[in-house]
Length: 215
Image (cartoon, rainbow, N blue to C red; front, side):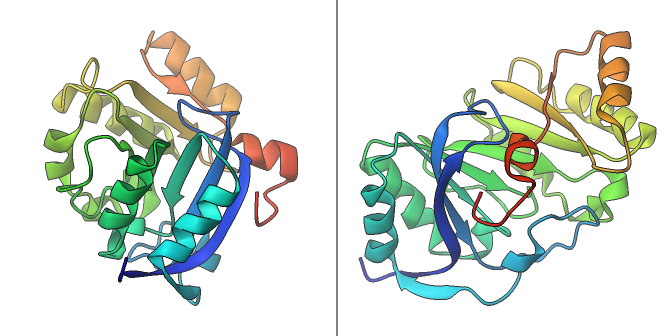
């Protein structure tokens, strides 16, 4: 493989979010992101990193003998080499997920990949960056995520679920409370009051490892 990938870190941990929460997973964190969400917890991946041959990345993943692999960032799709990396990981038989901001088109992403598309809410400060053409590229095994910073964000997310008919289109709709802005209890009560068919999630890795790098 002639492609190179700029990598911030490759590590093995428990998946802290999404439908596969709690499952041992290899994380491949690509460097770089064009967004600056005000709640970002991976700003260390904006710059730097190490340029690695794709085969070296693959070899490091294989060494963990994983079942699940997550390609994340930053924004992994900001690197063109992300597309062939995803396909190569799928070819090895792993269940591969892609964590993307939704600001870059997912067109051409291997259909075997589980896309976790994070639609940016108004209070993220990056709502205008959403590429809504991604909503037409969703597969039934994909997931859509909303980080909720306020009641306004919650109501906006509910509107987007209806606007793009996400119920039944994807496997999971994920609501996450933004730390320090909405309490988990508050968000849980809104979801219950509206009998909303979404999965509320907390970031398990922050609870277990206190958000230490490499976890």
